Length: 251
Image 1: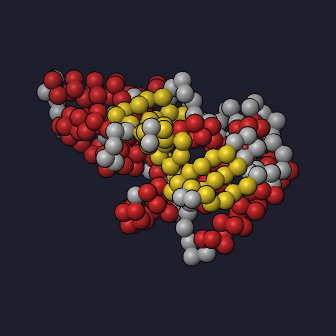
Image 2: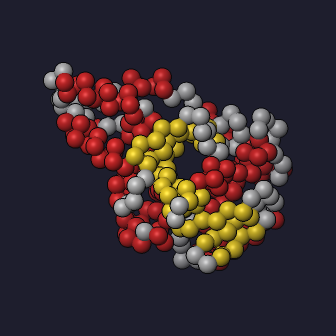
C-alpha cells in the first residue's frame, strides 16, 4: 500500500522553511554586527546554536583536519561564542559561557562507521539523515536504547526543526548519540545546546522498532515515511495494523 504522509500533516505544527529563513536572517545579522538579533529568546538560543554548529564543524574530517580545527576554535573564542576548546583523555571539551560540555566522536566509538555509508559521517552528506540513521544505529547498538524524535531550536524561539537522536545509558549516565553531529555526550548537555522541546517528544525503543518491522513490511515496506513513523508512531502503527486486519496489505 502507498504511505500517505499528508494524513499526518496535522501532527507537524512547525513550518521548517520559515524557521530556516529566520535563522539565515539572524545569522547574517550576527556575521555583520557580532550582536544578537533582538528577537524572542535570541541571546541564549543563538549562543547554543553556534556552539552546536562548532561541534558539527570540528567533527568533520579533511586532510588539514588539525590545522582547521585550531583555526576554527580560535575564531569562535575571539567571537565570544566559546571560552575554550581542548582534549581531555578520550573527550573533547567545549567550554561556553554557561557550561562545560564533554563529548566523544561517534565515529571513534563505533570504528566500523568510518566505512559505513561511504564515510558520509565525516562529511556534510550526513545532514538530513537523522531519522534514517537513528533507526539504523539503534538496531546496531547492542545495549537497550531508544530513538527520540522532537523539535530542536534554531537561533531563536520562532525557529524549530524536527530531529531524531538516540538515548541510552552509558555507565549509569544518560547519554545521547547524534549521527548528524557525529557526537556522543550527556543528555543534559545535548538538550541544552540543541534546545530540545521536552514537552513534545516521541520515544521508541530498539525492541519496538524491531517488533514493528513485520507490520511495516506487510504494508508499506520501504515506502514508510520515516519522520511520520518516528514522530507519530502510535497513530502510524495503528493505521498499518488496521490495513492488515482489513486485508489491504501492500498494493
